[in-house]
Image (tube, rainbow, N blue to C red; front, side, top):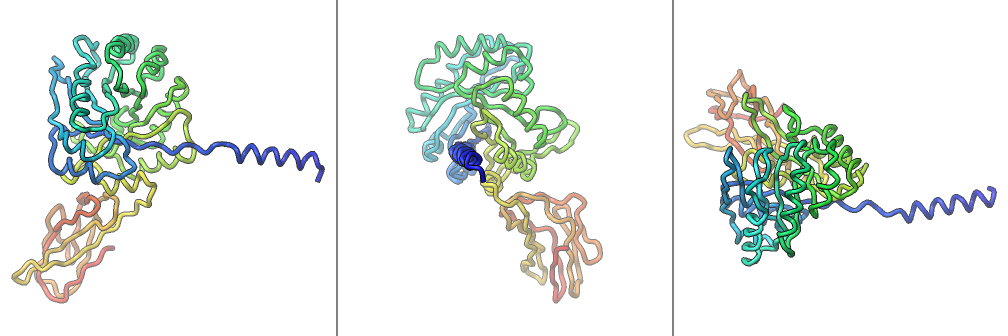
Length: 365
């Protein structure tokens, strides 16, 4: 080998080895429930340790008059969690922010801090019309000037803002920006490809670091159409982001932190598995449980760590005298069949039928 080529290869190798590894993504979560429960308070403690900060809904201005509503937050639970907290004010609608002040939520933040909560800052969640972003920036600049020190400021942002000439100025005003990439274009809640496009478009128009808000929930449209953020789809976006980072993305904020009583949000085991990049294969265990009087309950348990739809069919064998289904299942011959299987959260078990007979056995297809 030519000595010059050898030297060149050594230089290239040295540069490659000195290239810094991408910084790991920071994970945070929104606590967006308006009615606090014991289950929600417990979830603050049980949430995966990867969630470093909780962004907690503290105040709303909603309706045609934007009437202010304070959320009855369990402040003691926030303090016990030991996590950093951002107090959030949601302002509904796209109209100008006349009569609204950041001091409304700053009051909550300071009160929480006085009670032992590790308050980091405040946030405003306002879906401003793209055409009105210049006015939003003016408002934000005035409010920031009178906010005072000791509290960081963040705002939520929409992908549609990326085409506005007012965006660079607006994005430079807060300390943090959280880009929402879910529920942007009806009737889609989330796809990995669409979210990637939103993130890349945003990164092209601002050099400020930003976080990305990802969904963990399901909703129904007014016409009854169900929309769901499927764990595998969100995990696919996250895996691609880790493999091919987008400049400026500093972390992820999960919307929202679920709990045992929140059937429309991912369970904590599912959120943990997605955050950690763990396999998301569901696992269901069917069992027969003595119900007394010679009857057996047919119980299905999700023993995996990902929320998933239950199997559409379970087969039984033995000398069956009576067979019936519940929870969406019906008996067909020696099987239980569900046209729309129930969704079982990780660790959830459900009675889906009962049987009477002898030598009864259960099997999944």
